[in-house]
Image (cartoon, rainbow, N blue to C red; front, side, top):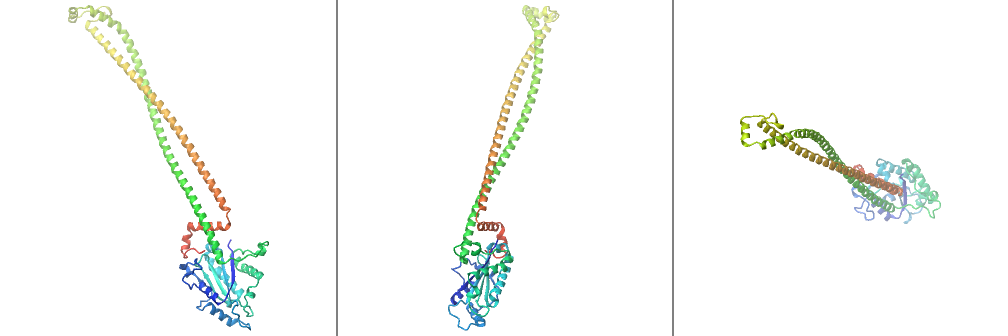
Length: 440
């Protein structure tokens, strides 16, 4: 939660008033003491008091001339001017830019009631530095016209009451926290809480931002590494899935080929059985014809050429196994037996070829079955490797969750700064571009 901040300091002599004026009105083109001023945004600065070109010292003299009622002359070392600084945490202005002017108007109204509106010589709001803030300069005149910063501001207890009053009238209105009180919040402290100067606050803010930037860079780098590993893992997974699909297609193709080979083998087996039956029939026929062929050859061997020629001219009957046949018919029978024998030999050759084909098909089927088994083993191995990669990514996720838990233990100020910076990286630049850049 944001904190309502009010800091009051006494200004020394007239020379110090000149320095305050130069800073508040941005009358110098360059400031070595405050490098945080962004001159490109100085046009966004504004005042809540009527504009005047008179110097601070002239305005102080004019007010003293009109309201000082003391009987003695004012000492040269008297405190003639005080300055109140009003601001809040940067996250309040960043989250509620529309409430910035309302907040400073409420601070101005409270100061008018507390120090007297006529005693305020100028109230200037600076929007060109890291955090918006208002410088309110007033002459420390009492209600009865005395010049006394001690009476107006009081001692330590009076300043604590002033802070309580500022919180009640302004801080609560904007749902802010009150700053630390040494006597209530830290009763064991050796010394009271000291208000930090703007330079100290800026230094602490810059240090917190540097730590937040370093932490944010480390977080982004770690996130990028995880995203890169996830991307690589997804690429490898897609590659494995594509390869698995190709293997499945190959497997389906091999299964179709095996089924076709099985059909061919079955058809070949059927043909082989038919050929065997045909061969057996031919063998039986050959066995029946063999005695007749032998008898015919014996008869042919006992006949002379003249008798054979006479038989050809005058057909006659032949006895024995060829009884009732002419020599010409016997020769045709022998030719038929020879042709049958040749056919039997050809059938034997076909049977041998078919047997070789069946053996080759069985060998190919066995090789394909072994290859399919190897592919199944490789597929299971790939699934095991993929599971290991998933387990590794889950381990990385758990490590990142531990990393986030460690971040949650960082001081609130750093975590708030980190959160604001991440919001800015995600889109805060677009939102702030309409109002001239980020104001912190």
